[in-house]
Image (spheres, rainbow, N blue to C red):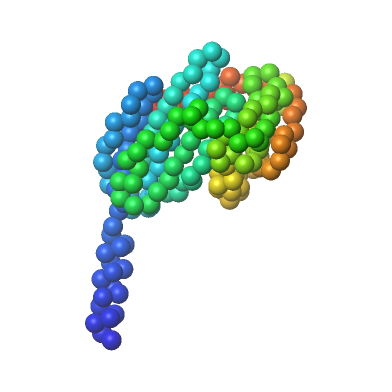
Length: 202
């Protein structure tokens, strides 16, 4: 009995002190060069992603890998950004780069998306994107005084994770064009926020 207790204690002590190792990198329009790091002890996942940022006639691709407290497998598309995300929980499991989101086939679902003038555009969802989403940034106002809004497609896993955070202003629905269209004036900085954040973290 004492030997079994000792083994259990050793197992607990070993697992409590173990940190997952992940590859970390960030890149804009270039290959992402892996760097092997030991994650902080509160991080249990390895995350990798590829995002396409649409800025007028210009497309910028950002790639990244990092340690994560939590993350999700799936993809999302807002009309101004398309992201494919992969998550795993073993040492150096994020060695492979996530694919270019443009290579993933359309799945038949259509959702409304926004540009700098309105939220009446229609986009084709791809891969596992089986929900339409709406993000309303109530603390950010446009020149008309209306809240900033983003719409698009998302995988159920991405929607569930967003809703679980209890962040106000996020909703998901299933069915073609279920995230109703309406005219909304938005800021260029809001549309570019994911890319600006990525650049600042390089």
